[in-house]
Image 1 (tube, rainbow, N blue to C red):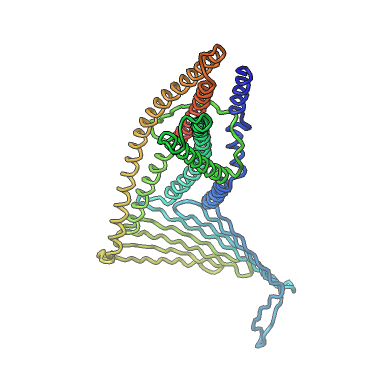
Image 2 (image 1 turned 30 degrees about the vertical axis):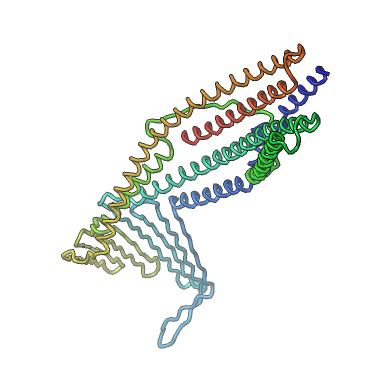
Length: 470
């Protein structure tokens, strides 16, 4: 009978440790099925679309247009009568805009007008260009580059962090399920033992049902049963939570990988620190922009050439130089008109000055606000940099604490297994009872659950270390 009992115990113990899937399979399956994680991927893809939109702003802009009028008519007075000529009139223009601070623009155009009777053909050509030199030290391209870099780093950091946090949520949910499974087994063991005590009282008749001892025993049994019922409800809620997080049903756990607790510390901080640094630089550029707006110092240069090739060819050349300072501006517009008969130069000089009274209160407030944001962003960067090393120290202590907990969990499991084997041997020789063996078995199962949950805690910490290293 004792041997048969041992076979049953060993079989039950083996079944309790057989699970269906590994943790990696659970996590990968959860990523495929979970709407929460799918939304993470969709958000990431939308961010990439935004990044591509920002990158397109840095490319050379080219626009081309053309038109053709095959029914062109031109009226001219000839000998007191109006003569109508018919022909074709075509025109085309091309504009190139360079992605620089000076907003360099180059445009060219060609137009051809010819009559069907072959009387004349006129070709018109135009070319103009403009550029602005800013001497304030502010660069809009620098601001754009900082915005693009911040967006890229933030997008990748958000995606990686969300993925690791999702894995943590799955791991923590699995750990909660194992904890409730452990509690149910312990509660069930207590209920079974107490039920056995009550049944013996009733069978042997050692205590009447009205005795205090019997009533207390029944009350204890009821309390233990309530605890078991509560543990089972908590377990059911944990299963629902797992289904909600992972998008799949709980079928058990088979294999848990060993946590890799590698703490990486960088001299300049991680990506989060880098982002605050970029934001601080952007705040400086925004302040420069406000200063440049209130105290401009730029030189605008443009030039234009127009010409026609026909019986009466002509060419006109014009340029413009304009310098804008704090309270004043000056501009010069030289030009030249060339025909077969004569060449006519031209020059226009103009200027403007004010006493600076145009700066209003809103301009001053905008500059002050920009200055405050610049200082605040710099403080945020310093706080982030300091917090980075504080977090590194905290994570280092967490690693040491987990390693000690993991070592104790393994030692407790080894001890429980040794005691379980001793109880089985003592049962064969009559020095132990079946209840003692079941208690030793439960201790082994509980120790196994504790070790699994400790390993899951380590895997959750591993994700925190990965997030810190991003």
